[in-house]
Image (cartoon, rainbow, N blue to C red; front, side):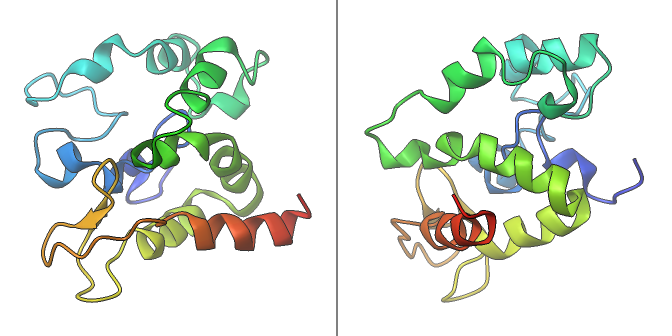
Length: 152
């Protein structure tokens, strides 16, 4: 795959560009093999390890999709809006397979940009790193648009 920012799309459909660790440069993205980064928990991720062992770019390329690991992540922390990004992973994977990685990355960059100053919004905190604007429902408009397009 030759997409410039390929490393910003995790195997499971999470946009690494909105991760606080990625923005703070302690992590180089879920697909990075660089062991010198400070955030190394990704190397123990069951989803990542499964995809790398099968030489897959994304979970949707697997014959076991959606598997127990993916569904467990999707269904974790259901009542905590800090984890909304996890609840959208299956939608993101469908979207990547439908419109392609490059178009999906552009969508994600727009979704996770602050409407006030244009800087990055990060998940968990759902706020802009630069101006601290809190955006409670970052993914809500994206999902509403997607659900209409996909007739969900």
